Image (tube, rainbow, N blue to C red; front, top):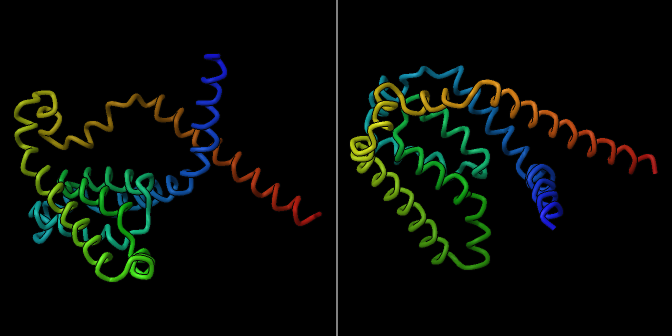
Length: 199
């Protein structure tokens, strides 16, 4: 019984779930890689308007609203921006606003529920993202104060340091797993399309 359940979990994780998120995941990794190589590490400390954490939260919401992506694509993007000096509150706001909002949904909501509902939906959603982002920025120094291990990592850049915690062989192994599963998925889909055309 346990063997069958374990096999079902593995099948769902590496087949059903992976097939649903792989394209978003690759998109997020590609954009994050571009940002990592193109932008300076001290971007959010060196550019005047970006130095304020409150401004970063507002900017993250403005960027996140029209960003058509799911959490799978947004996560590597936010992780890279955090390594560039983005405040944790702004990162949270982007993680919340990106998957939750979409300009394309405005027209759908307006058609189905009316303009009044659509306005209040987006108003409170944006307000929630802003409150959560500002609140996290407010409590973050206290978290660093009461968790010494976290504070020691944060002396330079907590997120760039944290990324180095994962063993290099594990990173390489996970990368190969994603690559092989992606090739397998694309091969099956291309083979299936060719087979359908031949019939």
